[in-house]
Amino acid sequence: MKSLGKNIIYAVIFLIITALLFGAIIDTQSNGPKEISISDVAKKISNNEVKAIVVQESNLSLELNDGTKTESKKEQGVGLLETLSSYGITSSTLGKIEIKIEDQGGSKYWMGVLLPTLIPLVIMGLILWWMLRQAKGGANQAFSFGRVNIRLFSPLKDRILFKDVAGLKEAKEELWEVVEFLKNPKKFHAMGAKIPRGVLLMGSPGTGKTMLARAVAGESDVPFFHISASEFVEMFVGVGASRVRDLFQVAKKSAPAIIFIDEIDAVGRERGTGMGGGHDEREQTLNQILVEMDGFERDTSVIVVAATNRPDVLDQALLRPGRFDRRVMLDMPDIKDREEILNIHAKGKPLSKKADLHMVALRTPGFAGAELANLMNEAAILAARNNRKFIEQEDLLDSIEKVLLGPARKNRIINDHEKQVTAYHEAGHAIVAAIIKNSDPVHKVSVVSRGMAGGYTLKLPMEEKRLRTKSDFVGDIAVSLGGYAAEQAVFKDITTGSSSDIQQATDMAELLVTKYGMSEKLGPRAYGKGQEMTFLGRGFGNDKDYSETVGTTIDGEINEYIQKGLQTAKKIMTTYRKALDGVAAALIEKETLEQEEFYKLLKDLGVSADSVTAK
Image (cartoon, rainbow, N blue to C red):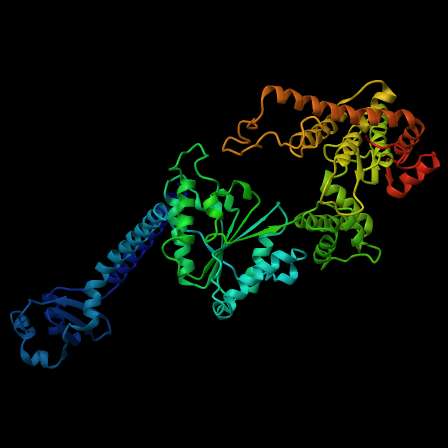
């Protein structure tokens, strides 16, 4: 509708311009010399008023003695003397007048004849051409679904190299071979090696898959095309396959080249499991990708690099050798990698000399690269908000909690009873974590509300853990229920504040029994095949691969581990009631206890660590 309105406005403007041009032409003609009859011409000649006559076929242009000019017309094909002789004009009379005969050919004649006619036609033609061009553009859009919106990476804009990507050493080595293969293929061809068809980058969200692909683009000297897999899919069947063909056709013209497909699981999911059967748009697109990557045409120098955080749902035909020959796993960064990532994102930011990025890396286990970048950005924002010239250590530590839990709600108004309940709840978590064996040390305890949490206890491992034991699970269940046990011990009642703790304890107990085979009764067996994602959401529940009797046993084992954790937490609350009261009182007064302050307070209250061991 907006386009139609613009067209109408432009057409009206053109018509107004045409009308003005016509008016100018008419005014020019009306302001020209006055036209008189041939008899008046004869009279003026007889009265010796005419100085000169210009004859152009039947047109007569007269210049009078007083300098004025006039025009007239004579009979076509008849001479001037013959015409005027009938009015008594003789040749001797005409001999006194300067007579000039001109041929009315040339440009002036044609301009005078054609211009008034052509100008309107040209203007109307331009209007029609412009309107048809607009209509053709709309038609092209209607039939351009099959063209792919591929983008060519520009190395001159925000270029990233492998040295700018911290950690991921093995992944960079795998991708560097691909870059080197494209730069120096003879080195590999001499050994009989063939160029890899595809490289699949797999890893959790935020681990750096897209950034690593950008580094490949920065390192390689070949055209690098990038596109999101979701851009293939349209509501019309066959459009996605057409776009895949167009993508590979463009890349083959620029070969050797690299194609990067982000989030390939959008079209690469396993076929035959969806609700659309075998003819839906997504499966047609996947079929075309399979053909283009390893079909009949194999003599191409196009490498496909794809990224996904759901490799488990990809079609097996996509993962076989010949298509994605290499699968590069991007792990979560360890403490060394986290410190390197923090140093990279600290460039360009004014860090205080007291800022310790190693301590920040120590407090951020499980953080991905994107979360660490967000952490540094939040620290810079916090420092600017407080009108500081440098980013201090406290800004970095506060940013950790903001990324984990959300912004602090210090202005939230709560009554004294709720604050007391929250203090005892968090003190319960902290004391169980400090006393029980196989639990990570407490780094901070606070009753300041953050995000959805009324308070929080931050406990972090001293070193990276790749494996977890049964004792770790049992200890964590007890720590999760420490707040619940503290509320029961002090107030003889429970609140809704333990809902997330109970959910966390239940999830850990369920994993312990059904996934890791740590139940003594059920033994080393996994139960349930997991959840498959469908277009409706999280499928229709777990696919049960066990009987109802075994299901009852699983429920019993889960309940037993939860009850063991609860009994351990209750025992600690009873044995160390004085420490519970002391920590809760300190939280009510100060609201936050850091690691050193918390453990010093426990020591002053006569509590030593590892006094109780989780069984």
